[in-house]
Image 1 (cartoon, rainbow over the protein chains, first blue to last red):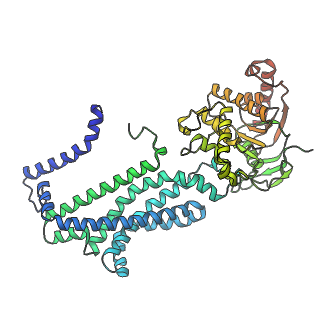
Image 2 (image 1 turned 135 degrees about the vertical axis):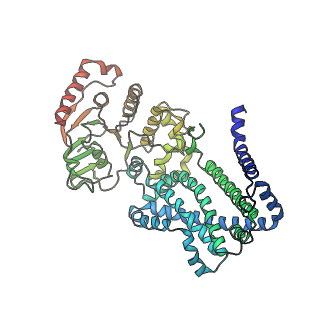
Image 3 (image 1 turned 180 degrees about the vertical axis):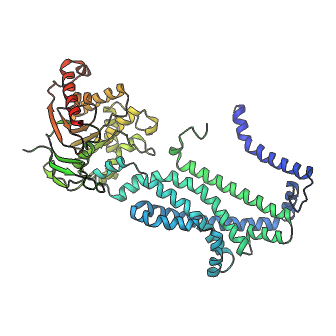
Length: 257
Length: 260
Protein backbone atom coordinates (compact mmCIF):
# COMPACT_ATOMS: atom_id res chain seq x y z
CA UNK A 1 0.00 0.00 0.00
CA UNK A 2 1.47 3.35 -0.95
CA UNK A 3 1.40 6.48 1.14
CA UNK A 4 -1.67 8.08 -0.40
CA UNK A 5 -3.73 4.91 -0.10
CA UNK A 6 -2.68 4.53 3.54
CA UNK A 7 -3.60 8.14 4.22
CA UNK A 8 -7.04 7.63 2.66
CA UNK A 9 -7.58 4.52 4.81
CA UNK A 10 -6.65 6.37 7.98
CA UNK A 11 -8.30 9.64 7.08
CA UNK A 12 -11.78 8.91 8.56
CA UNK A 13 -10.22 8.00 11.92
CA UNK A 14 -7.93 11.02 11.89
CA UNK A 15 -10.80 13.37 11.18
CA UNK A 16 -13.00 11.82 13.88
CA UNK A 17 -10.25 11.98 16.49
CA UNK A 18 -9.44 15.50 15.32
CA UNK A 19 -13.05 16.59 15.89
CA UNK A 20 -13.00 15.31 19.48
CA UNK A 21 -9.62 16.89 20.19
CA UNK A 22 -10.76 20.30 18.92
CA UNK A 23 -14.01 19.91 20.88
CA UNK A 24 -12.17 19.01 24.11
CA UNK A 25 -9.73 21.90 23.65
CA UNK A 26 -12.48 24.42 22.87
CA UNK A 27 -14.44 23.48 25.98
CA UNK A 28 -11.37 24.02 28.17
CA UNK A 29 -10.08 27.15 26.45
CA UNK A 30 -13.43 28.94 26.46
CA UNK A 31 -14.36 27.49 29.86
CA UNK A 32 -17.72 26.20 28.61
CA UNK A 33 -19.72 24.75 31.52
CA UNK A 34 -20.39 21.00 31.46
CA UNK A 35 -24.17 21.47 31.60
CA UNK A 36 -23.94 23.53 28.40
CA UNK A 37 -21.53 21.52 26.29
CA UNK A 38 -19.75 18.63 27.98
CA UNK A 39 -16.24 17.78 26.73
CA UNK A 40 -15.66 14.35 25.12
CA UNK A 41 -13.91 13.14 28.30
CA UNK A 42 -17.08 13.86 30.33
CA UNK A 43 -19.14 12.00 27.73
CA UNK A 44 -16.73 9.08 27.97
CA UNK A 45 -17.18 9.16 31.75
CA UNK A 46 -20.96 9.02 31.25
CA UNK A 47 -20.45 5.90 29.11
CA UNK A 48 -18.62 4.27 32.01
CA UNK A 49 -21.12 5.38 34.66
CA UNK A 50 -24.23 4.43 32.70
CA UNK A 51 -22.89 1.50 30.69
CA UNK A 52 -25.85 -0.72 31.68
CA UNK A 53 -28.74 1.58 30.75
CA UNK A 54 -26.95 2.76 27.62
CA UNK A 55 -26.34 -0.78 26.39
CA UNK A 56 -29.90 -1.89 27.20
CA UNK A 57 -31.57 1.08 25.57
CA UNK A 58 -29.33 1.21 22.52
CA UNK A 59 -30.15 -2.46 21.90
CA UNK A 60 -33.84 -1.64 22.12
CA UNK A 61 -33.47 1.27 19.71
CA UNK A 62 -31.48 -0.86 17.29
CA UNK A 63 -34.14 -3.60 17.38
CA UNK A 64 -36.96 -1.11 16.91
CA UNK A 65 -35.16 0.49 14.00
CA UNK A 66 -34.31 -2.77 12.28
CA UNK A 67 -37.84 -4.15 12.56
CA UNK A 68 -39.28 -0.91 11.19
CA UNK A 69 -36.67 -0.93 8.46
CA UNK A 70 -37.41 -4.54 7.53
CA UNK A 71 -41.10 -3.66 7.19
CA UNK A 72 -40.13 -0.68 5.05
CA UNK A 73 -37.98 -2.83 2.77
CA UNK A 74 -40.75 -5.38 2.25
CA UNK A 75 -43.51 -2.88 1.78
CA UNK A 76 -41.38 -0.40 -0.18
CA UNK A 77 -40.17 -3.06 -2.59
CA UNK A 78 -43.69 -4.32 -3.16
CA UNK A 79 -45.23 -0.89 -3.61
CA UNK A 80 -42.33 0.19 -5.83
CA UNK A 81 -42.90 -2.78 -8.12
CA UNK A 82 -46.64 -2.06 -8.26
CA UNK A 83 -46.11 1.65 -8.93
CA UNK A 84 -43.45 0.91 -11.56
CA UNK A 85 -45.66 -1.73 -13.18
CA UNK A 86 -48.35 0.56 -14.50
CA UNK A 87 -48.43 4.15 -15.56
CA UNK A 88 -51.99 4.54 -14.28
CA UNK A 89 -51.08 3.32 -10.81
CA UNK A 90 -47.99 5.52 -10.88
CA UNK A 91 -50.04 8.59 -11.79
CA UNK A 92 -52.67 7.77 -9.18
CA UNK A 93 -50.43 6.98 -6.24
CA UNK A 94 -47.65 9.50 -6.76
CA UNK A 95 -49.46 12.61 -5.45
CA UNK A 96 -50.71 10.59 -2.47
CA UNK A 97 -47.21 9.43 -1.65
CA UNK A 98 -45.74 12.91 -2.02
CA UNK A 99 -48.41 14.22 0.30
CA UNK A 100 -47.80 11.48 2.81
CA UNK A 101 -44.07 12.01 2.67
CA UNK A 102 -44.52 15.73 3.29
CA UNK A 103 -46.25 15.07 6.64
CA UNK A 104 -43.73 15.33 9.48
CA UNK A 105 -43.79 11.85 10.97
CA UNK A 106 -43.63 13.22 14.53
CA UNK A 107 -47.18 14.42 13.91
CA UNK A 108 -48.27 10.82 13.38
CA UNK A 109 -46.94 9.56 16.70
CA UNK A 110 -49.96 10.74 18.75
CA UNK A 111 -52.27 8.87 16.37
CA UNK A 112 -50.16 5.73 16.60
CA UNK A 113 -50.23 6.02 20.39
CA UNK A 114 -54.00 6.37 20.25
CA UNK A 115 -54.19 3.11 18.29
CA UNK A 116 -51.45 1.04 19.86
CA UNK A 117 -50.60 2.68 23.20
CA UNK A 118 -47.16 4.00 24.07
CA UNK A 119 -44.02 1.91 23.69
CA UNK A 120 -42.55 -0.47 21.16
CA UNK A 121 -45.17 -0.61 18.39
CA UNK A 122 -45.51 3.13 17.65
CA UNK A 123 -41.72 3.38 17.49
CA UNK A 124 -41.46 0.51 15.01
CA UNK A 125 -44.25 1.99 12.92
CA UNK A 126 -42.72 5.46 12.91
CA UNK A 127 -39.42 3.99 11.74
CA UNK A 128 -41.32 2.11 9.04
CA UNK A 129 -43.42 5.07 7.90
CA UNK A 130 -40.48 7.42 7.62
CA UNK A 131 -38.20 5.05 5.72
CA UNK A 132 -40.29 3.28 3.08
CA UNK A 133 -40.69 6.28 0.80
CA UNK A 134 -37.17 6.43 -0.70
CA UNK A 135 -37.33 2.69 -1.38
CA UNK A 136 -40.62 3.00 -3.29
CA UNK A 137 -39.39 5.94 -5.34
CA UNK A 138 -36.12 4.26 -6.25
CA UNK A 139 -37.63 0.93 -7.22
CA UNK A 140 -40.31 2.62 -9.30
CA UNK A 141 -37.72 4.82 -11.01
CA UNK A 142 -35.60 1.82 -11.90
CA UNK A 143 -38.57 0.16 -13.54
CA UNK A 144 -39.75 3.29 -15.31
CA UNK A 145 -36.39 3.84 -17.02
CA UNK A 146 -36.11 0.58 -18.99
CA UNK A 147 -34.72 1.35 -22.46
CA UNK A 148 -37.67 1.33 -24.91
CA UNK A 149 -35.55 -0.38 -27.60
CA UNK A 150 -34.87 -3.31 -25.30
CA UNK A 151 -38.55 -3.50 -24.50
CA UNK A 152 -39.23 -3.62 -28.26
CA UNK A 153 -36.73 -6.42 -28.79
CA UNK A 154 -38.41 -8.52 -26.12
CA UNK A 155 -41.98 -7.60 -27.05
CA UNK A 156 -41.33 -8.50 -30.67
CA UNK A 157 -40.39 -11.95 -29.42
CA UNK A 158 -43.72 -12.17 -27.66
CA UNK A 159 -42.49 -11.37 -24.14
CA UNK A 160 -45.23 -10.67 -21.63
CA UNK A 161 -45.04 -7.76 -19.26
CA UNK A 162 -44.12 -10.19 -16.51
CA UNK A 163 -41.26 -11.56 -18.65
CA UNK A 164 -39.87 -8.07 -19.20
CA UNK A 165 -40.22 -7.35 -15.50
CA UNK A 166 -38.38 -10.53 -14.52
CA UNK A 167 -35.63 -10.47 -17.11
CA UNK A 168 -34.96 -6.75 -17.28
CA UNK A 169 -36.99 -4.62 -14.87
CA UNK A 170 -36.13 -6.20 -11.55
CA UNK A 171 -32.41 -6.79 -12.18
CA UNK A 172 -31.91 -3.27 -13.43
CA UNK A 173 -33.79 -1.89 -10.43
CA UNK A 174 -31.50 -3.57 -7.91
CA UNK A 175 -28.82 -0.84 -7.87
CA UNK A 176 -31.54 1.74 -7.26
CA UNK A 177 -33.03 -0.45 -4.56
CA UNK A 178 -29.80 -1.12 -2.68
CA UNK A 179 -28.84 2.54 -3.03
CA UNK A 180 -32.09 3.55 -1.37
CA UNK A 181 -31.44 1.23 1.60
CA UNK A 182 -28.61 3.49 2.76
CA UNK A 183 -30.99 6.44 2.92
CA UNK A 184 -33.81 4.38 4.40
CA UNK A 185 -31.82 2.88 7.29
CA UNK A 186 -30.70 6.33 8.41
CA UNK A 187 -34.28 7.61 8.25
CA UNK A 188 -35.48 4.58 10.21
CA UNK A 189 -33.26 5.67 13.12
CA UNK A 190 -34.79 9.12 12.98
CA UNK A 191 -38.24 7.57 13.14
CA UNK A 192 -37.64 5.25 16.07
CA UNK A 193 -35.86 7.90 18.16
CA UNK A 194 -38.61 10.47 17.52
CA UNK A 195 -41.24 8.06 18.71
CA UNK A 196 -39.18 6.90 21.67
CA UNK A 197 -38.70 10.43 22.90
CA UNK A 198 -42.36 11.35 22.49
CA UNK A 199 -44.12 8.18 23.55
CA UNK A 200 -42.11 5.37 25.10
CA UNK A 201 -40.49 4.22 28.30
CA UNK A 202 -37.58 2.57 26.54
CA UNK A 203 -34.91 3.26 23.97
CA UNK A 204 -32.18 5.82 23.51
CA UNK A 205 -34.72 8.54 22.69
CA UNK A 206 -36.45 7.99 26.01
CA UNK A 207 -33.15 7.73 27.87
CA UNK A 208 -32.05 11.09 26.48
CA UNK A 209 -35.34 12.68 27.48
CA UNK A 210 -34.95 11.39 31.05
CA UNK A 211 -31.33 12.52 31.18
CA UNK A 212 -32.45 15.97 30.11
CA UNK A 213 -35.09 16.07 32.85
CA UNK A 214 -32.39 15.22 35.39
CA UNK A 215 -29.93 17.63 33.82
CA UNK A 216 -27.37 14.89 33.12
CA UNK A 217 -26.02 16.63 30.06
CA UNK A 218 -23.05 14.28 29.41
CA UNK A 219 -25.51 11.36 29.30
CA UNK A 220 -27.60 13.16 26.67
CA UNK A 221 -24.52 13.48 24.54
CA UNK A 222 -23.58 9.86 25.19
CA UNK A 223 -27.00 8.98 23.73
CA UNK A 224 -26.19 11.03 20.64
CA UNK A 225 -22.88 9.22 20.23
CA UNK A 226 -24.62 5.84 20.48
CA UNK A 227 -27.07 6.87 17.75
CA UNK A 228 -24.27 8.11 15.52
CA UNK A 229 -22.31 4.88 15.93
CA UNK A 230 -25.35 2.69 15.27
CA UNK A 231 -26.22 4.84 12.26
CA UNK A 232 -22.75 4.56 10.78
CA UNK A 233 -22.62 0.80 11.38
CA UNK A 234 -25.95 0.20 9.67
CA UNK A 235 -25.11 2.52 6.79
CA UNK A 236 -21.84 0.65 6.28
CA UNK A 237 -23.67 -2.67 6.34
CA UNK A 238 -26.02 -1.42 3.61
CA UNK A 239 -23.14 -0.06 1.54
CA UNK A 240 -21.35 -3.44 1.70
CA UNK A 241 -24.57 -5.21 0.76
CA UNK A 242 -25.00 -2.83 -2.17
CA UNK A 243 -21.51 -3.51 -3.47
CA UNK A 244 -21.92 -7.26 -3.04
CA UNK A 245 -25.23 -7.45 -4.84
CA UNK A 246 -24.75 -4.99 -7.69
CA UNK A 247 -21.04 -4.94 -8.49
CA UNK A 248 -21.85 -4.68 -12.20
CA UNK A 249 -23.41 -1.28 -11.67
CA UNK A 250 -20.38 0.14 -9.86
CA UNK A 251 -17.69 -0.32 -12.41
CA UNK A 252 -17.11 3.38 -12.88
CA UNK A 253 -13.89 4.73 -11.42
CA UNK A 254 -15.62 8.06 -10.92
CA UNK A 255 -16.52 7.60 -7.25
CA UNK A 256 -13.04 6.35 -6.41
CA UNK A 257 -11.20 9.06 -8.34
CA UNK B 1 -46.38 -16.38 -54.49
CA UNK B 2 -46.60 -13.08 -52.67
CA UNK B 3 -43.68 -11.31 -51.04
CA UNK B 4 -42.32 -12.25 -47.61
CA UNK B 5 -43.00 -8.87 -46.01
CA UNK B 6 -45.76 -6.76 -47.50
CA UNK B 7 -47.12 -3.44 -46.37
CA UNK B 8 -50.04 -2.34 -48.50
CA UNK B 9 -51.45 1.19 -48.34
CA UNK B 10 -50.62 1.57 -44.69
CA UNK B 11 -51.60 4.67 -42.74
CA UNK B 12 -50.36 4.91 -39.19
CA UNK B 13 -50.34 7.46 -36.39
CA UNK B 14 -49.16 6.93 -32.83
CA UNK B 15 -51.58 7.14 -29.97
CA UNK B 16 -51.56 10.65 -28.58
CA UNK B 17 -50.29 12.16 -31.83
CA UNK B 18 -53.82 13.11 -32.85
CA UNK B 19 -54.38 12.97 -36.57
CA UNK B 20 -50.71 13.60 -37.46
CA UNK B 21 -49.79 10.57 -39.51
CA UNK B 22 -46.35 8.99 -39.18
CA UNK B 23 -46.72 7.12 -42.45
CA UNK B 24 -49.38 7.51 -45.14
CA UNK B 25 -50.11 5.21 -48.04
CA UNK B 26 -46.97 3.23 -47.29
CA UNK B 27 -46.55 0.22 -49.56
CA UNK B 28 -43.50 -1.97 -49.71
CA UNK B 29 -42.88 -5.59 -50.65
CA UNK B 30 -39.73 -7.46 -49.68
CA UNK B 31 -39.05 -10.91 -51.12
CA UNK B 32 -37.90 -13.87 -49.10
CA UNK B 33 -34.10 -13.92 -48.78
CA UNK B 34 -33.85 -10.36 -50.02
CA UNK B 35 -31.74 -7.65 -48.43
CA UNK B 36 -33.80 -4.47 -48.47
CA UNK B 37 -32.65 -1.07 -47.28
CA UNK B 38 -34.93 1.83 -46.43
CA UNK B 39 -33.45 5.30 -46.52
CA UNK B 40 -35.01 8.68 -46.04
CA UNK B 41 -34.75 12.03 -44.33
CA UNK B 42 -34.75 11.90 -40.55
CA UNK B 43 -38.17 11.63 -38.94
CA UNK B 44 -39.72 10.14 -42.07
CA UNK B 45 -41.21 7.15 -40.26
CA UNK B 46 -38.50 4.59 -40.95
CA UNK B 47 -38.71 3.27 -37.42
CA UNK B 48 -42.49 3.15 -37.71
CA UNK B 49 -42.01 0.84 -40.66
CA UNK B 50 -39.96 -1.45 -38.44
CA UNK B 51 -42.53 -1.45 -35.68
CA UNK B 52 -45.31 -2.23 -38.14
CA UNK B 53 -43.42 -5.11 -39.71
CA UNK B 54 -42.62 -6.70 -36.35
CA UNK B 55 -46.09 -6.33 -34.87
CA UNK B 56 -45.15 -3.78 -32.23
CA UNK B 57 -47.65 -1.38 -33.80
CA UNK B 58 -50.70 -2.07 -35.89
CA UNK B 59 -51.76 0.10 -38.82
CA UNK B 60 -54.80 2.37 -38.69
CA UNK B 61 -55.61 1.32 -42.22
CA UNK B 62 -54.03 -0.84 -44.87
CA UNK B 63 -52.55 -4.26 -44.28
CA UNK B 64 -49.28 -5.76 -43.09
CA UNK B 65 -48.43 -9.34 -44.01
CA UNK B 66 -45.35 -11.25 -42.91
CA UNK B 67 -44.63 -14.79 -44.09
CA UNK B 68 -48.06 -15.09 -45.65
CA UNK B 69 -50.03 -14.13 -42.56
CA UNK B 70 -51.72 -10.90 -41.55
CA UNK B 71 -49.77 -9.34 -38.62
CA UNK B 72 -52.07 -9.40 -35.59
CA UNK B 73 -49.54 -9.90 -32.79
CA UNK B 74 -45.80 -9.61 -32.34
CA UNK B 75 -43.92 -11.31 -35.15
CA UNK B 76 -41.85 -13.92 -33.37
CA UNK B 77 -39.91 -14.91 -36.46
CA UNK B 78 -38.15 -11.52 -36.45
CA UNK B 79 -34.92 -10.46 -34.78
CA UNK B 80 -34.14 -6.81 -34.12
CA UNK B 81 -31.04 -4.71 -33.57
CA UNK B 82 -30.82 -0.98 -32.96
CA UNK B 83 -28.33 1.84 -32.89
CA UNK B 84 -27.76 1.23 -29.17
CA UNK B 85 -26.62 -2.32 -28.43
CA UNK B 86 -28.98 -2.50 -25.39
CA UNK B 87 -27.13 -5.41 -23.82
CA UNK B 88 -27.90 -6.10 -20.17
CA UNK B 89 -24.90 -5.10 -18.05
CA UNK B 90 -25.53 -7.73 -15.37
CA UNK B 91 -25.35 -10.59 -17.84
CA UNK B 92 -22.25 -11.82 -19.62
CA UNK B 93 -22.22 -11.51 -23.38
CA UNK B 94 -23.15 -15.17 -23.75
CA UNK B 95 -26.04 -14.83 -21.29
CA UNK B 96 -27.18 -11.76 -23.20
CA UNK B 97 -27.35 -13.85 -26.35
CA UNK B 98 -29.45 -16.44 -24.56
CA UNK B 99 -32.07 -13.88 -23.56
CA UNK B 100 -34.34 -14.29 -26.63
CA UNK B 101 -34.26 -18.07 -26.13
CA UNK B 102 -35.60 -17.56 -22.63
CA UNK B 103 -38.55 -15.67 -24.10
CA UNK B 104 -39.56 -17.15 -27.40
CA UNK B 105 -41.15 -20.57 -27.92
CA UNK B 106 -40.27 -23.36 -28.52
CA UNK B 107 -36.87 -22.60 -26.99
CA UNK B 108 -38.35 -21.21 -23.82
CA UNK B 109 -39.82 -24.48 -22.61
CA UNK B 110 -36.77 -26.42 -23.81
CA UNK B 111 -34.32 -24.10 -22.08
CA UNK B 112 -33.67 -26.34 -19.11
CA UNK B 113 -33.17 -29.46 -21.17
CA UNK B 114 -31.13 -27.99 -24.01
CA UNK B 115 -29.16 -25.28 -22.24
CA UNK B 116 -25.77 -26.76 -23.16
CA UNK B 117 -26.78 -27.02 -26.80
CA UNK B 118 -28.02 -23.41 -26.80
CA UNK B 119 -24.79 -22.19 -25.22
CA UNK B 120 -22.88 -23.93 -27.93
CA UNK B 121 -25.03 -22.28 -30.58
CA UNK B 122 -24.43 -18.88 -28.98
CA UNK B 123 -20.70 -19.47 -28.91
CA UNK B 124 -20.72 -20.46 -32.57
CA UNK B 125 -22.65 -17.35 -33.46
CA UNK B 126 -20.19 -15.19 -31.53
CA UNK B 127 -17.34 -16.84 -33.40
CA UNK B 128 -19.05 -16.11 -36.71
CA UNK B 129 -18.91 -12.37 -36.02
CA UNK B 130 -15.33 -12.52 -34.76
CA UNK B 131 -16.07 -12.63 -31.05
CA UNK B 132 -14.91 -16.15 -30.24
CA UNK B 133 -13.90 -16.53 -26.62
CA UNK B 134 -15.47 -13.20 -25.60
CA UNK B 135 -18.70 -14.76 -24.32
CA UNK B 136 -17.73 -14.71 -20.67
CA UNK B 137 -16.95 -11.01 -20.69
CA UNK B 138 -19.52 -8.49 -19.60
CA UNK B 139 -20.80 -6.15 -22.32
CA UNK B 140 -19.12 -3.14 -20.69
CA UNK B 141 -15.78 -4.89 -21.06
CA UNK B 142 -16.23 -4.87 -24.84
CA UNK B 143 -15.67 -2.02 -27.29
CA UNK B 144 -18.62 -0.32 -28.99
CA UNK B 145 -18.12 -2.29 -32.19
CA UNK B 146 -17.90 -5.58 -30.30
CA UNK B 147 -21.06 -4.75 -28.36
CA UNK B 148 -22.87 -4.10 -31.63
CA UNK B 149 -21.67 -7.45 -32.99
CA UNK B 150 -23.01 -9.13 -29.86
CA UNK B 151 -26.29 -7.26 -30.32
CA UNK B 152 -26.53 -8.65 -33.87
CA UNK B 153 -25.94 -12.14 -32.51
CA UNK B 154 -28.73 -11.63 -29.99
CA UNK B 155 -31.04 -10.70 -32.88
CA UNK B 156 -30.11 -13.92 -34.70
CA UNK B 157 -29.91 -16.48 -31.90
CA UNK B 158 -33.46 -17.76 -32.27
CA UNK B 159 -32.84 -18.32 -36.00
CA UNK B 160 -35.37 -15.73 -37.18
CA UNK B 161 -36.51 -15.63 -40.79
CA UNK B 162 -36.55 -11.85 -40.77
CA UNK B 163 -33.86 -9.51 -39.46
CA UNK B 164 -34.84 -5.91 -38.78
CA UNK B 165 -31.97 -3.45 -38.38
CA UNK B 166 -32.65 0.11 -37.26
CA UNK B 167 -29.52 2.18 -37.94
CA UNK B 168 -27.42 -0.50 -36.27
CA UNK B 169 -24.08 1.07 -37.17
CA UNK B 170 -25.03 4.72 -36.65
CA UNK B 171 -23.03 5.16 -33.46
CA UNK B 172 -19.80 3.56 -34.68
CA UNK B 173 -16.69 5.09 -36.20
CA UNK B 174 -16.26 4.81 -39.97
CA UNK B 175 -13.78 1.91 -39.93
CA UNK B 176 -15.72 -0.20 -37.44
CA UNK B 177 -18.86 0.51 -39.41
CA UNK B 178 -17.35 -0.83 -42.64
CA UNK B 179 -16.09 -3.89 -40.77
CA UNK B 180 -19.61 -4.56 -39.56
CA UNK B 181 -21.04 -4.09 -43.05
CA UNK B 182 -18.92 -7.06 -44.05
CA UNK B 183 -20.07 -9.03 -41.00
CA UNK B 184 -23.71 -8.47 -41.93
CA UNK B 185 -23.03 -9.15 -45.60
CA UNK B 186 -21.48 -12.53 -44.76
CA UNK B 187 -24.17 -13.46 -42.24
CA UNK B 188 -26.87 -12.76 -44.79
CA UNK B 189 -25.04 -14.55 -47.59
CA UNK B 190 -24.62 -17.61 -45.40
CA UNK B 191 -28.16 -17.80 -44.01
CA UNK B 192 -30.21 -16.22 -46.81
CA UNK B 193 -32.25 -14.53 -44.13
CA UNK B 194 -34.56 -11.69 -45.19
CA UNK B 195 -33.17 -8.38 -43.97
CA UNK B 196 -34.78 -4.97 -43.72
CA UNK B 197 -32.19 -2.34 -42.90
CA UNK B 198 -33.28 1.15 -41.93
CA UNK B 199 -30.49 3.65 -42.31
CA UNK B 200 -29.64 7.16 -43.33
CA UNK B 201 -26.24 6.14 -44.68
CA UNK B 202 -26.64 5.82 -48.46
CA UNK B 203 -23.29 4.07 -48.96
CA UNK B 204 -24.29 1.50 -46.38
CA UNK B 205 -27.63 0.95 -48.11
CA UNK B 206 -26.10 0.57 -51.58
CA UNK B 207 -23.26 -1.66 -50.40
CA UNK B 208 -25.50 -4.10 -48.55
CA UNK B 209 -28.89 -4.11 -50.23
CA UNK B 210 -30.47 -5.82 -53.21
CA UNK B 211 -33.04 -3.06 -53.33
CA UNK B 212 -33.09 0.40 -51.77
CA UNK B 213 -36.37 2.13 -50.92
CA UNK B 214 -36.41 5.90 -50.50
CA UNK B 215 -39.01 7.34 -48.16
CA UNK B 216 -40.52 10.81 -48.31
CA UNK B 217 -40.49 13.13 -45.34
CA UNK B 218 -43.27 12.70 -42.79
CA UNK B 219 -45.87 11.36 -43.33
CA UNK B 220 -43.64 8.77 -44.91
CA UNK B 221 -44.27 6.66 -47.99
CA UNK B 222 -42.00 5.05 -50.56
CA UNK B 223 -41.16 7.48 -53.36
CA UNK B 224 -38.40 5.57 -55.15
CA UNK B 225 -37.45 1.93 -55.38
CA UNK B 226 -33.97 1.24 -56.76
CA UNK B 227 -32.61 -2.17 -57.62
CA UNK B 228 -28.90 -2.47 -56.84
CA UNK B 229 -27.46 -4.83 -59.42
CA UNK B 230 -23.85 -4.67 -58.33
CA UNK B 231 -22.56 -8.24 -58.48
CA UNK B 232 -22.20 -10.27 -55.29
CA UNK B 233 -20.15 -11.04 -53.33
CA UNK B 234 -19.34 -7.38 -52.92
CA UNK B 235 -16.02 -6.27 -51.60
CA UNK B 236 -15.46 -2.95 -49.79
CA UNK B 237 -13.48 -1.93 -52.89
CA UNK B 238 -16.77 -1.73 -54.77
CA UNK B 239 -17.65 1.38 -52.79
CA UNK B 240 -14.92 3.26 -54.68
CA UNK B 241 -16.10 2.30 -58.17
CA UNK B 242 -17.92 4.80 -60.39
CA UNK B 243 -20.94 2.48 -60.72
CA UNK B 244 -21.33 2.54 -56.93
CA UNK B 245 -20.90 6.27 -56.55
CA UNK B 246 -23.36 6.90 -59.37
CA UNK B 247 -26.07 4.98 -57.51
CA UNK B 248 -25.31 6.77 -54.26
CA UNK B 249 -25.42 10.06 -56.09
CA UNK B 250 -28.70 9.24 -57.75
CA UNK B 251 -30.28 8.21 -54.42
CA UNK B 252 -28.98 11.36 -52.82
CA UNK B 253 -30.86 13.34 -55.43
CA UNK B 254 -34.07 11.54 -54.47
CA UNK B 255 -33.53 12.22 -50.79
CA UNK B 256 -32.94 15.90 -51.41
CA UNK B 257 -36.20 15.98 -53.35
CA UNK B 258 -37.96 14.00 -50.64
CA UNK B 259 -36.96 16.54 -48.00
CA UNK B 260 -38.60 19.39 -49.87
